[in-house]
Image 1: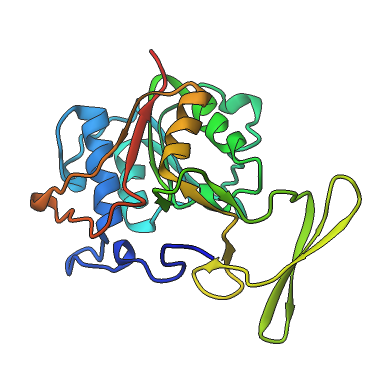
Image 2: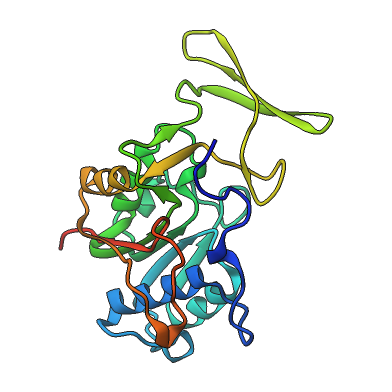
Length: 238
């Protein structure tokens, strides 16, 4: 299935003995700082600015707790409160945020994934910043594992997991050899993104200043060991 690791990822290994952060987590904070302040500031040194409104999509608890103290920030979830489905925004969420963090979420969104990119654009105020990570490859196109997904359920049969799907036309599909992130039966991978398609999806949603950040930042321990799944920033036009 994937051409990148589905369970173990070198970006996820905690490499800071003080805070337990991984390369990916430090990259997110670094690029959030650059996007908000035009300079890189360590997270504890972020200024206290409650007028800045931010939202996270299942963010890492360690940096989420600090962002809650610095800004008017809420870490949201798809399966528990505070709840937010980025593909179906309630009216009070439109143009509500100065920044949105979405890290390793969009590969799990049921198709069409364009709804998640559009929701990310719609939730931001003019000039608002998106900090995004998704695992991607350099293949020409994104590979959807379940392109006909409509009404579905993942069923556990002994040691196997099978996805049962009823298509929009009423037919049935069975999918095996499922890929989960976080271990068997955890979060199901819906697609393998291509780098070009991620950029295209962001631009189609209306984002500008789309940047894939490949450079290392040794001062902050940001040393990506690969060229996929790097931090991406994009901005809603002012």
